[in-house]
Length: 343
Image 1 (cartoon, helix red, strand yellow):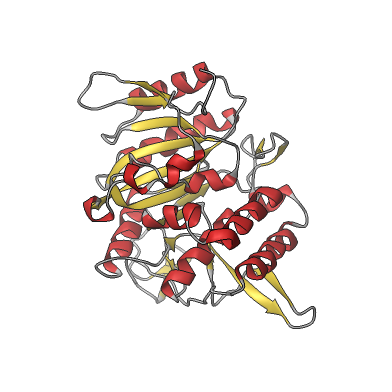
Image 2 (tube, one colour):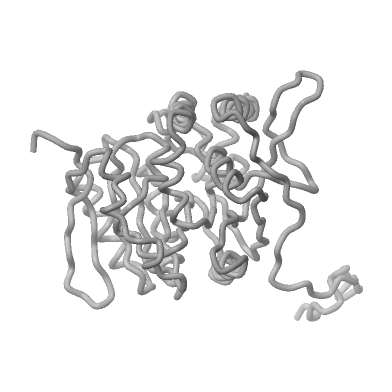
């Protein structure tokens, strides 16, 4: 092979339960935006979603096995695909990883590993001809969500309307105009939010095309900013969705979320690799001390090149139950009154 880009090798395993996809397909960049190669939006199924997990570091493979198994076990998941962004990982390693993830999974949804065409963070939003669902879940390889919360988030996404447009997720941040410096900043507010993180982001599949292929020169400049910063692809996707809807995203409450990448973890799961291959603490906010400033710079630059600020605030969180609000003394402790006595 002397032309094209090495992306996929297909290895099929004859089994009603599993198949393996791991890499060798020749595709040029233009093919991703060729509408004739993509399924019609009307043909996409709405009863399931496709999981796209961003993978890079081999040190996270043990966590990845757990995470992919949880998603594969969900009846609402059509397929789990690990988008591998590390260009130096040997092809043999990815073949073995795809095989091991499949045979060790307790679920029925197929699991595959695909080498990305580049290490660009923009590549996680490339439209893919093999996506058969109206919704995709964009997530990281170090976030483990309980099955009921995964299903609840998908139910919320489907319930928004006949054609859901808003982003739905579990991790929220906010933009704000700093009146002192008269510039956009990236922050966290206790009562409102305008940005969902790609730690867990449910969205319509069509947004992949709009992010990667539409918007002309201004979006091309915005994607270049993502490459220059090696950051902020999630913020840019929030720009795309907010520009389409005129509304903010939807934050969903989860019963249990294990964030293995948070720098506040103790033990052996605190370090990993950046997209540049540098060993650092794996939590995004721990990569640089000026993380929030850099993210604010992204918002400022996106506003400049797109010539608009579509980000819109949302308020509140969707939860699957209210439960008892009062506290009672049980066993010498204050607990919610409907909680059972400790045994």
